[in-house]
Length: 423
Image (cartoon, rainbow, N blue to C red; front, side, top):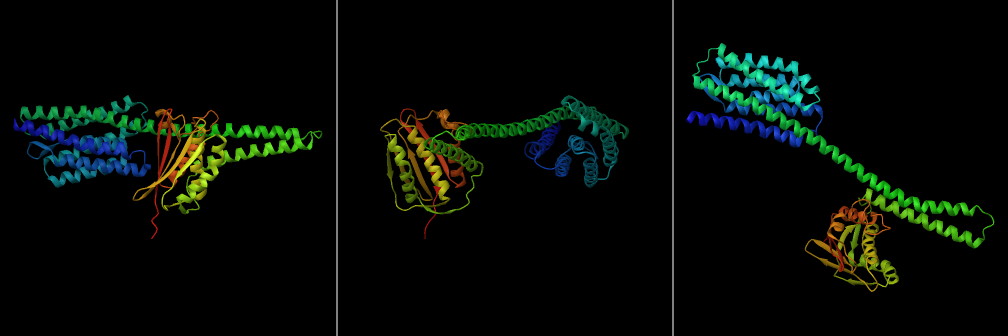
């Protein structure tokens, strides 16, 4: 009874060694390295699995050790190739020699040399197989034949095994074929999932690029079309000077609008800061309020500012202004008449906290979730680039941005930025 329990323990231990090492490789390493490094790592992982399996065998007869070394050996050759296979063969035989030069050692030389040459023949077919079922069939047949070869060599060497020993050994290696089936299934599915995931990432990138391109082309085309129309009208020599000035002024305004859209796109595409300087937030917020107050007054809204003592941060002044003006402008546009925009500055031990709160229509949870994504805007005439720029600038300044909103009550943007301590 104790022997059976011990055999089960060896079985589970061998299985865990192989699974853990190959799981780590196929889940976290494969596909992230070049071909040479890939073969090297397959060899290393296979060798570790072989050595660990051989270190914890069961021995139904003196001088003969049995374990699951065949699984990492076959998998290593099939996925790593012939060079890896030769390396595994030498390592396996050397380690078996360290364990003891006996009849089991000589039988290992015969068995694994024959398995190696057989695998050298079928490995190209395995690697070229396009279908999962074909790979699975090749691997299982290879493992099945190696088990039969092993049992045959044991028979030739006239190993002194009882009927119970032969039954235990046959069950052990019969289960090995089943284990090989599941390991190849796991490996191929892991490879497929990794491939599908990489394809999805590429598609996601293309989707983002296409959405941004669609947004930019749509928004830039409109002012260019208007400008083109006015320039065509200016070709008419009979147009009065006043109308010419009017057309030129409108054309310049449209070109300026196109320039702003392109600038927003470039800021989003390259959010890194170039001209970093020390900024005192109260002064910068006062400037922001001077810029947005006329716009707020025009829409019958009031702007409030709650100051703090001097708080310094590091950043690029122009982009910092652009970020806050975008948020304030969106807040003003979201409010009906007599709305209030409150800009508040606070601080914690290591951070400056700027909150911009409006009394507008508010946002739903889904709208908040999609803020900052390409081509999404809550305004019918918006491009979504302004909010994307806000998120990009805050990230470039090593800050965080949180949005809280309640429909019918208002929205609050909270920007947290690292402070600069003045000695």
